[in-house]
Amino acid sequence: MLRKSAGALVVIMALLTPGAVSAEGLRLLMLERPGCHYCVVFKRDIAPIYHRAEEGLLAPLVHADLRHDLPEGITLTSRAHVTPTFILLDADGQEVERLTGYPGEDFFWPYVNGMITRALDAGADQP
Image (cartoon, rainbow, N blue to C red; front, side, top):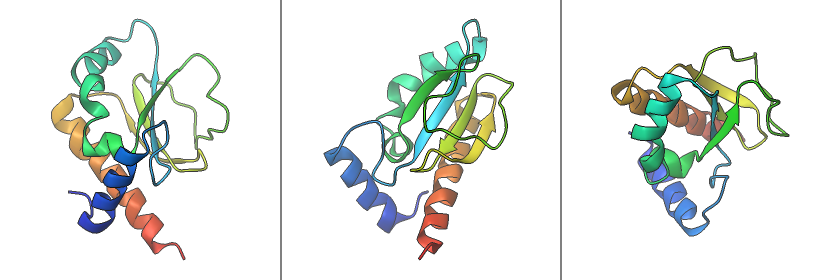
């Protein structure tokens, strides 16, 4: 579970200011490609509800094609080679952490929740 105090405040702020960037500035980039079976499964099972989940409010989902240039302002620690790859980005567009592949929603939700929690905790440690 995300930190209650910061998490609840960020969720409220995200609800009041919808858009492509959360109140913390986090985004979850999904790198995909046409013909990717696991991308189709994710888009069918998770994508329609992601924006309503706490994780989606804290780190809105953005999509990019693995074979094309990244959206402007995004910097990754290394090139992705597998689709889908989910990359948590900070407010500056820098990679924070990634999940390579989609092994199903039972693994996806806790893993993404952990990535967001660690990013929020790291931000709390900043002066």
